[in-house]
Length: 458
Image (cartoon, rainbow, N blue to C red; front, side):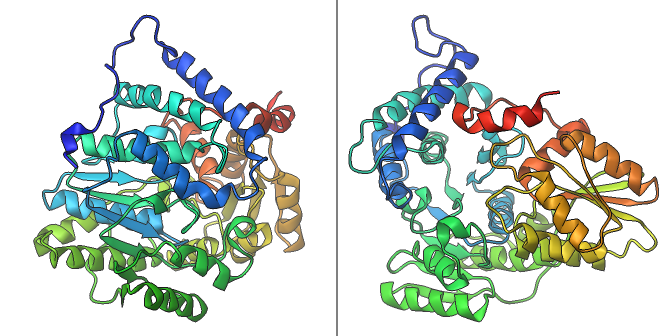
């Protein structure tokens, strides 16, 4: 398909009479759609499984911008966002015009859609949403697969933006799923598989084999697959899937230069990214070796073992499942911090394995402060407090993340260490409380926010 035939959104300046003439009007329209979506989707028991079909329809309605666009699809549980970011950075340093699609965002939904390392601009994003909103509203009448999710809509918008901006190669991180993920609507030239672990069991299955089946189910026929080292149970599932569809499977191995992100687990992610670059090189996407190393060293990802303040040393990490929490604990333990009191600020989404996240962190903790992030999926802090107490850790419940940060820093003292973790929502609120970023508004379903309001009001 001719990339220039992809329909560009309407002009970025407001047009009289256009629905959602201002940014706030547009956000209100999106929020109203989400409220209708929540009520409508319950009529479709297989709604999650139909996500690729809905995503494909939205893409086609935007002119099928993904057709002919080289795409690298990043699947897995642990570190897939880091893998995607590393690969994009290396390719960009190598001179290619890159697109990067990741989730979730920290402070702005525009972070999810990047071209050449820069988030989509506010005017362009607003214009794309103006195109998307009527399509979402139309999806409320889809009678075989149900209404489109906002993630499916953003996936279509991301690919349309990449095509319009002349992206040469796009790196696309899957959401939480695999064969039932919106990104499965795409046809990649290369698939990367980061370590698979237990997470989102309510949606993906309650065993490692079931989750591996969901993730590996997104492997397309005859595509090349590169994998990080896997648990033997997951590896067996991945191998079986590749045999079934005739995909070429390789394990990412080899020497590794310096990595810009902290933690031993990031070396696993970096090795997978390097293997991807070399595999792309065999298809003509050459990157000089020295540039490859510079790209890896130059990667910066907010919210991944990121130091955000000193006295006390304060780090944030988006670890939100047991495997990620164990990797965080190992990174903190290997980092030393001799004699530093360590206080954790923890907030977790309710659908996570709360005990599995607390367990690897508790042996390192001199104290913990728990709080509920300003998000409808946040777990009750009292449940988290009970888990810390059961492991003999002094704990306090705070009213909000900002208050928890103040308390944790007070407990740790100037020479101590505070680690805020458990979800990217907590990470975002900590960074905002420290003045490192400003949140841009993004809609939530009104019904979903209603139960949370009493705990947020003074």
